[in-house]
Image (cartoon, rainbow, N blue to C red):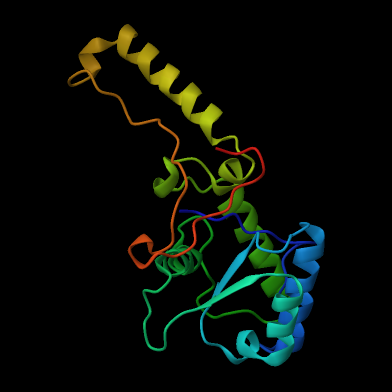
Length: 193
C-alpha cells in the first residue's frame, strides 16, 4: 500500500513535537480535505503529542478513528516503516546526512521529497504507479495503457519475450493494514473501485 502525502500549503515542519502543533496540522488537514466522521483512520506511534488530550479531543470531535502502535512493536504499521525508509534512503531525494540548518531549509527539503514521492516514485506495492496516480484514481488507466504498450511490443518483437506472459497490470484493489489482525481497510476516494 502506498499513501499519498497530503499537505495544505506546502510542507509542514515544526521546530518541536507537541500537541499544539499536532492539533494545528491535523485540524488544517481535516478542513482542507473535507474529512467526514468515520472516513479516516489515523495510525500513530505512542508519541506524547499524538496521545495528548488536545489531539485526542480533535480526533474525537471529527469522528476520526485512532489507532496506536503497540509499545515496542516496530512492525505494527509496516507501511509507515517502509515509507520512512524511503524518506531516509531514496536515491532521488536523499535525506541530508548532517540534517538541516533551519526550519525553512527542512520545509524546502520536505516539499521536494513530497513532490517526488507523490508524483515520481513508482511504488512496487501498487504495480509501479505513483501514489498520486492511485490517490486520484488514475492507476487503472495508467496500467491499462502500460499493458497495451507491452502487448504491442511483444507483437512487434516476439524474440525479446520469454513465454506468453507480460507484467501484471491488474490494478491493486483495496489494501489492508495488518489484515490478519482484522484492521480497517484503506479508504479510497468516492467512486473508486
